[in-house]
Amino acid sequence: MDEGKRSVLGVLVDAVDYDAAVAKVLHAARARQPLGLTALAVHGVMTGVHDPLHNARLNSMDVVVPDGQPVRWALNLLYGTRLRDWVSGPELVLRVLRRMADQGLPVYLYGTTPEILDRLVVSLSRQFPRLRIAGAEPSKFRTSLPGEELALAARIQDSGARLVLVGLGCPRQETFVYGMRQHLSLPLMAVGAAFDFHAGRLRPAPGWMQHSGLAWLWRLGQEPRRLWRRYLITNVDYLIRLLAQAAHLRQPVPPEPTNQRPESLPM
Image: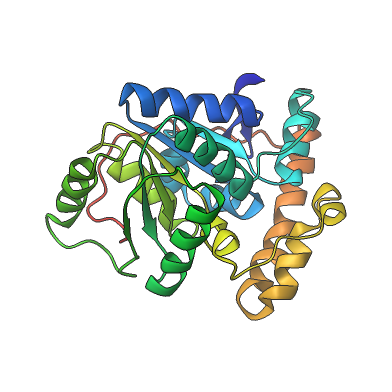
C-alpha cells in the first residue's frame, strides 16, 4: 500500500505499509540511488511542528513512515487511508535486513555508543548469518567538524555498503540523513530506538500495548526520567492539534521541502 504523502500537523507522512517501505529501500539499494527514510512516531512529528526548519527537512525526506498507532490513526482519521498497521522502525529494520542479506547487499551501521554498537553487530549477525556488515561507527555525540561529513561519506562509499542504518535519536538522526543524503548514492534509514532494541538494551512493549497505542507508556516506564516530558506533555499537545485539524479548526500548511545544506551535522 502506498497512497503518497499526507499532512499530519504540517509534517508530510507517507501512507505506506511495510511492503511498500521495504520495496522503496531495496530498489534504491540495488540501483545505487540516494534515498532518505525516517520512521516518525508522535515525538518525531512534534519536532517538526515546533521547528519550521526541521519540518522543511522532514518534508524533503523521500519516505516518512508512520511509526506508531497514533500516527497511523491520524492518517486514517484525516484521510481515510485505511492503513491496517503502523510501520515500526525496529520491525522495518528487520524486514529490510532480511532482504539485504538474501540479496548479498552490504549494510553500514552508524550511531549509538561503542558498547551498544558491538552488541548490535553480534545480534544482527546471529539473526541474519548471511548479512554483510560493511562497517560500523559509533556516534561522536557532537556536531561535525569542517570536512568531517565528507570523510565519513567517503568511508561509507569505499566500504561497498548499499544501505546505511542511522541510530542517533530524534531529531539528530533526521538531520544527519537529510545532510548525508546529498553526499551518498544509497539509501539512509533513520531508525530511532531500533539499535537499542536489537542490541538488547531495551525490550519492546507487549503486543497488546502496541496495538492499543500504549507503547509510549511502556517506554515511559523503562526510561521515566528521560522521557516523561516527551510523552506526558508532547502527546497531549499532539492530540489537541490533531483533533483541531480533524475538526477543520486549524489546517497547518506544510513547509516546502528544502535542499539547504546544514552548516554542520550531528555526528
